[in-house]
Length: 100
Image 1 (cartoon, rainbow, N blue to C red):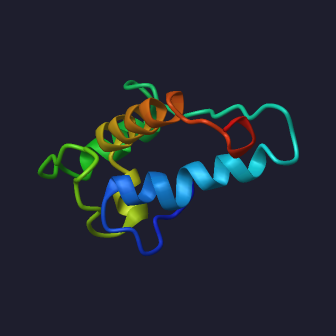
Image 2 (image 1 turned 135 degrees about the vertical axis):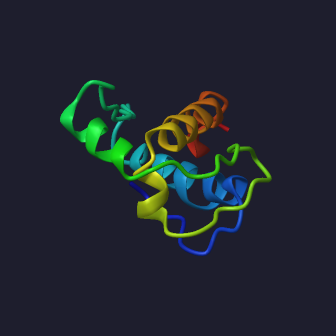
């Protein structure tokens, strides 16, 4: 996963990290497949994660701040699913630099 580095919001992350990475990949190929991982609810890994406890949910929106440790954030399946949905929405409107 691409780390947010110095990004303060999810919009910053999309514009400064995620979409530039995709655009850069398209310079050396004609197609990029983006694959999101997902854990089944009845898997051992999901069970282990569930035992860690619940945290306060924060909606992922354009202006939402990126808080805390990125790896810890991605350990929570609901947050990860919401992030991937958000990135998918942003990617669906993306125009590669060569297409402009």
